[in-house]
Image: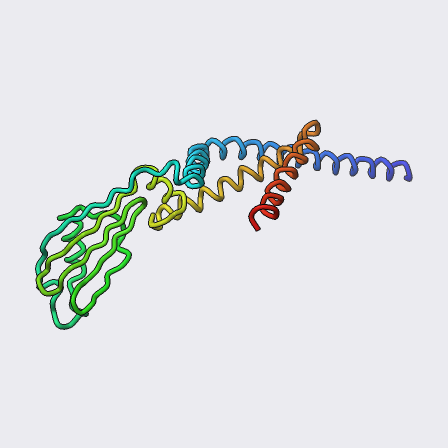
Length: 217
């Protein structure tokens, strides 16, 4: 009876050890699979944010010429000069300007004063400020274009890039977080590299903190 209990106990321990071993292998395999394919999916994203990180950090060196131009025109005075400011034809004004002057970006402001209406269109590396005389319907547009580098820098920061690009930034952040975490999990399963890998990770963290404490804070 005692011997059978010992055999049963040993069998249970072996089964428990086997289950742990299987679990460890499964975790390692899933982490490896996620790390590889998430890395490939986010390759272009990581490259984009890495390159634009450099162009942002050295904006004076990489920034291209900022081009500013002025355009003038006339629109229907009836759209902007009713005595009741709540009856200003905002939709017609915006669509006319987009069609006639090829304005881009999102409408960020539509301000109505006694004498004029002012509109602002904003996009990555792009800005257009419109001033409309409410008496005559005459308008003047000040256009700003920052060039390719300016567009990329604004996309990196998510400035004036809209909700769709905001989703891209959020998804990119999640992907890079998962790549980092799965890489950390994988190093824990490599006995020969575990200590050195974690040591270098800690060194990198401490160096970042040291730079902040000594030269930034």
